Length: 447
Ligand code: PFF
Image (cartoon, rainbow, N blue to C red; front, side, top):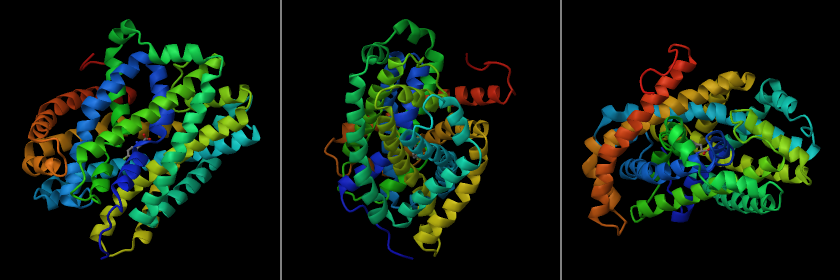
């Protein structure tokens, strides 16, 4: 078996982790979740959850990964608790299911880049979406997106993932910043900023029961938590790194990208009078594309926007493929290239039903968001807080100058606050799934 790689530099790790975190979640889903949940009212809750829950939860995955220096499934055995491997495995399953439909959406983005350049969706944003989102074209673009993802992962951690993300992240930031400046010049800018930044507290208190679970799901998804990805990435990390400092940098950059995306999307939507509440899998694409189609310079700016989205989606997709790949490469005698290709083909097949029907895609998405993701975060919290707490605390303390007080606070946070918060979210999420599956008629457990 080949020797295990490590990141060449600390910055390399941060770029790769930011690459995983920054994705469709920030640039596409975040503005539309914000738009469907009352604008700034959602933003306030979301930011609180990112820092109070997301940041400490990221450190949980980091300590498991760096301590064990193993893929997310073998990690638990390495730490002496092999019967917890199922937790890591569930995270890997989450990665696989997510990549299956994430790649399909990545394929839509490809079609939108082409559609912006040719003006194909101008004036008929709705029919364009239907033609690219489900059917043979969607299967084809899904295949292309997956092939690129496989190619990068096949090159390995250093020459594939690290090198690719080092180019992608700065490109995303620069382009998004440029688009936000353009947004500032639009007629809708003032109204967009008002909606985005000035919270309506009455709306917040009336809708808190729907805002909080959405914000939790969005926060964990955008930080790539609960998928074992951060375990896999931290396993290639050296001991002299400060986990809280790196985690802090990743959380801050990821949040800035999402905020920046809002500064593009809201002025655009308000400029042409589209209701920002029209969220959902497809409407987000339809309303944005519709807006680009009506604005001067829309072809170029639309192409730039969707190109940013593509880069962001790709750098996340590679992390989703890296997780199962690292497991097979660590444990079996196959080359990384063979494994990445084989897994990519299988995950492509798993995604085909979602490329044929957006309803199926919605289902994959709901199962991940409402169940797998919070469940796995809960398991990681219980494992780190109550089972492997000695080695976890020691690991967190290595390479940081923050001292024992920080480590103790973190440990108790992981023991109590995260399980209670996530446990509640999980109950709400499962209830929501059952309602959607029409097993429950209405919210009966917690409403
Ligand atoms: N964080 C990515 C996004 O915001 O689009 C999605 C993602 C990537 C989720 C990797 C989970 C993951 F493991």
